[in-house]
Image (cartoon, rainbow, N blue to C red; front, top):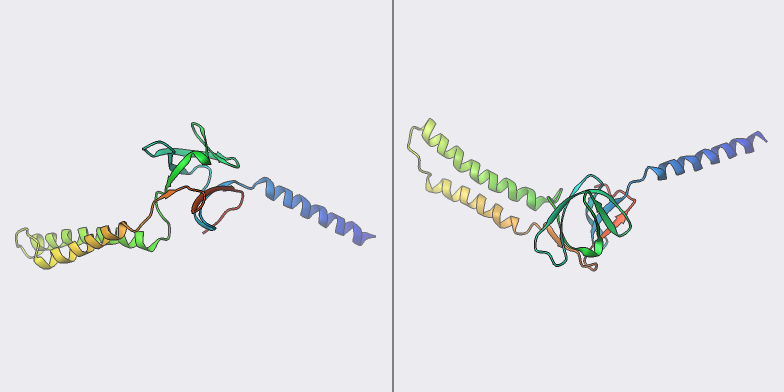
Length: 171
């Protein structure tokens, strides 16, 4: 008899635990490409979007989500009204990381070379041909790679779509 009482208490504890966990679930907005998650937005995140028929992107602070709309600090927008989403960055994206480093490295290389020429060697300002080729190659490669980083996604429902979900797609 004591065994059944302890099983009942254990089952009741498990049920209460599951109820309490579901009470703390948070809704997320997920940008998907077919079934692959590209980005997730949580309440408190900033979002940049373009509505259908408009030419400019709007920015807003996300307050929450319903099944088919985003609640912003100033109004509520249906997923169907959104034409494009602009992501501020693509996390863990090698091309965007390398392109930024290449442009920065090219600018720093020419700057450090000029400081070396002026301060250490005592020569006047004027970059050498080698310096211009190296820094120009780095800057050009970085700018060219930035063309391949996609930041704007057209929400069509077929290729890219928005979904509100209770599950956190942690990366």
